[in-house]
Image (cartoon, rainbow, N blue to C red; front, side):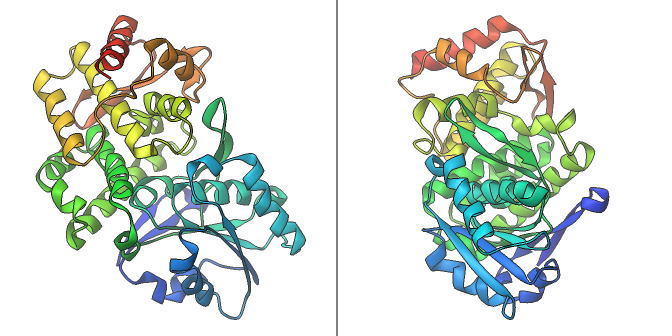
Length: 361
């Protein structure tokens, strides 16, 4: 087992990474002060791991909520089923919520924990690659709205993150590729040597080879923990973690949540940001082609949806958390391994990229 620490003062917490962690109940019990535990999972994950996690809390009052599976259900209406259970069972302020699942379960459970009785403890147990390397770390929680992704939520840190890499053995190939998109992101924004490693080892990640996968998860978590420790609430440098997300969220919203996986949309969004960085003179054509090839090798799309227009992208990107005082902020690259957040970007390059990708599609 490897342990990565997210250093946030009194809100600091560990990320445990390794195999067969579900067998070590003390990892979870050490971060549980409650006699009541509510496990939130979904109908896909529950048959696989729910009983194991329930057994970790033997002796406590444990119940569960099983949500429908998919981004389409990341809504306020479905979130209310968590509140319903908490209230019906009279959970108090010392209760602990446990998120057992991928990014959707983690985001919704975290938001429920942040808002129930103005804040109760929660633990993240991510079961997808994307959630293990990204969404379970850093305290972003929330739900989607028909007009924009993740527009309703809160910053709220878990007590710990337990990433059992054994859960990836049951992950569909498409979901595995979607997680690799976020892994590639870390190489692009802060860790050029990691990007080089990915260029040499992406096929090992696709095959879910044990050592390569564990290393990629650990390195990704270390990179995210470093950025979050500098800027917990995304008032500055943390925004670089959104490379490709403004474009990607527009794709997810336009296509209907869940039709494109988050990692798939982010992959195309990252390529659009890299292309724009190249047009502005920061990257070479060779850099762009290298990123494009890596994303393609990872089993991810490299073209935007066929039915989207540049105007549609602009309209949807305007309804985004990265818009400040009416100004759109984009994450661009100065070089591979160094990102920058910019409001002073070349709008002509933006329109050119959108038209290029939409025409190609």
